[in-house]
Image (cartoon, rainbow, N blue to C red; front, side, top):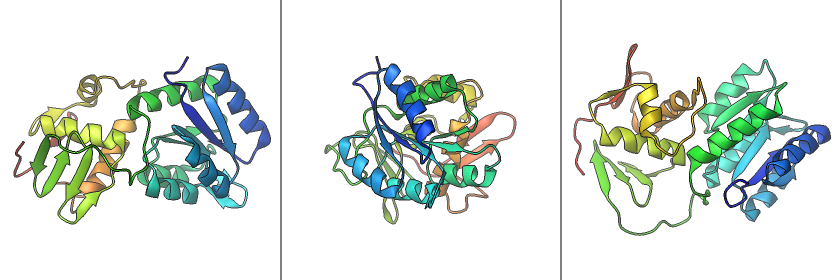
Length: 241
């Protein structure tokens, strides 16, 4: 049974799809809630949701709008469900912070595998973005940024920066291995406790989002560089524990 009976919110306006996903998740021991629009999502979020599966093509509601609204307040995993040809929505969804996507038609085993993977990467149950963290902690400072490892916070020259759990773990890993080229396989190995699927592109998506948080120009990254054919390297000008 999933640890602590994780609570999944299924957001879809197709009754048949919602019933199918509910039955699938409940058979695996998950607790499940349902919503068909933004009002339903807002209501459900007050009941301790751990992960959202979100159909981006809701009748009368833009799924991307719901994803943005969730991201503004909550740091919890979102798995988008998209039509096979909806590449633009898929890209925009990943850019605003979705953790993974599943294209229709999908196989329930794939859905379960991605849910398990994302929940493991997310770590402890998600909290509201504005929730206060425990005081104190080790800090890593680089180029005007402060990464607080205990509070799991990132602060920049302009103040607090919203960062998801997966993005934080990845940035902390790079900060502990500065000026070293890390391949995707090495990153997967070093991020212990995370469950990575074959050909998992979540790392690349998180790196793209990290660049939006810490780079002045995401098209010409200075802190988090791509080393062609090898991986990525974190190259701050200044770094101190």
